[in-house]
Length: 391
Ligand code: F3S
Figure 1 (cartoon, protein in one colour):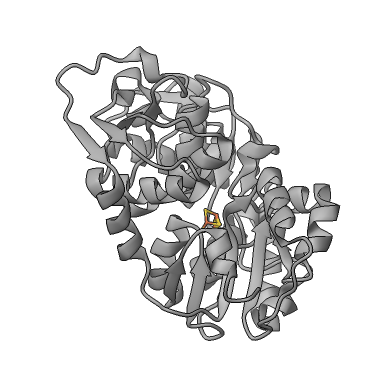
Figure 2 (tube, protein in one colour):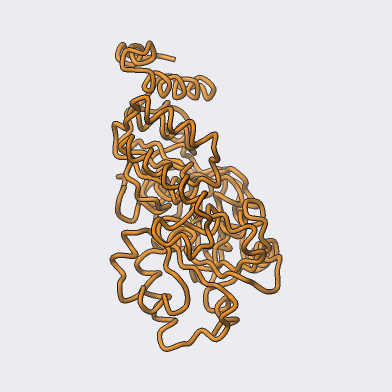
């Protein structure tokens, strides 16, 4: 792999041990994936932020990097952590967990990372542009910026994205290259257009295509629809990029001749729904996977306004970013009559196992991960149906 003189020097440790380690990791990934060189990145988004997911090993790695002088050289945002920074007691979090979680956040801050702690940085804090090369982890977010915005990132892991953020470069392979962004399959979709139908569509398509690059016909997703669909496809399959005819910026760039066409309609959506629903009742209803947007906050508040929570045994969590929570004071007031509006965290990266066993969600992504990462049985429905049991 070709390295500039500058890059060779970093690899030789001339800019310190942390930069050397970061360069070593990026170069190693580049060699594995056959990159010819490195490219500059405009931003990074980092996963590996919850103490639940990274544990003491991850904490030690971050301590070594941060205390060894590692600093990011491009704007870098952080994924949700294991708890709301202020309201963790309302999430049944133990002090020992909270202490380590807060240390992790401080270590990222020490490295210059913006501790936004949201999986939707593209809604405000970190918005890439069309054609820009970035290094993003968080499968739902990277799929959204690749597809809906037309930025370019591979499906980075937490350490790889951090290493790229430190050296400001990533290996030039995969979805950074035009040819590899070509659709691999056409999806003729028939859905009712609700946000939940986009979640089920994403689930069904991920199950059908695995890691391909779908080209959609028959849908017209808004930002919120694309947000939920990106998350679903990245969880049920490993889709990191898709195109939507007439909607996404690169959809018209490729010749579709010879591609297989798959139809996704009522039968496939029912199959997706069946796969996700494993429980009949819930102890927790958790909304906001990916984190709730302003529009979703406003829709939920409008739906709840004037209603009363009748079943007090079921907890309700609304998950969003600090920024959106601050901007939606009136919506928060209405929603908090039903449950806490939590910032910086989510039902999957928080340690809910041991507290709850059955969780309701409107998100196919959460529906995939709650059983495997949180030992939950799941009820997956649209918001109004989920809420029927408490209203
Ligand atoms: Fe975000 Fe957590 Fe879902 S990180 S995409 S809310 S699993």
